[in-house]
Image (tube, rainbow, N blue to C red; front, side, top):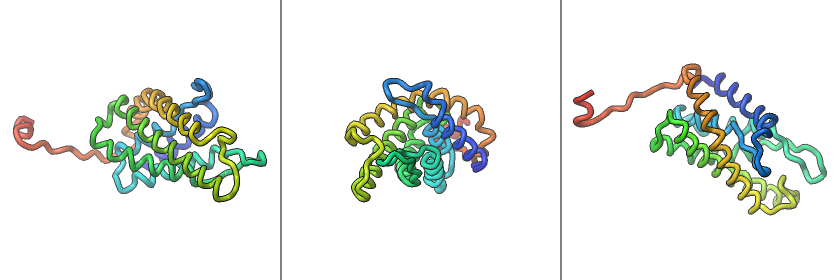
Length: 193
């Protein structure tokens, strides 16, 4: 995998998420491009680097999107998205053996699973942090349960936005330098090939 292309795609997606995706906001739910980029890389990157690649994207998300602290100041906290994306990657990587990697619809299903898992872990990490430092979570005064519900709806929005995003990313596959390993067919299928 070409790390320069991956980092450029992650930075562009995170910048679009921070500024441009407000256009797609419906009912307070704002879909994001970054999960689509991460899942696209996870579907073709070697297993040994897939979780690290997702964690790197999570670090970029943490640094680009600060949270408001209880006193109204901006809080840049590297960690919640890093852990959330790592957990989402551990869920999405086994899915790549079950799904057709180059189909945007199967990619959208993987983006939904990745976003759902990452959203739940993100809420959990912020809740634990709020209890440990006697602070508040970014969604205060709402409850954590309402934030989980919002993240579930957001995962659906991410999946819908992932369909055109993954189609576009598939057109740039040659730039990513993924190593393609042909699958061997056994039995009669191998004889006819």
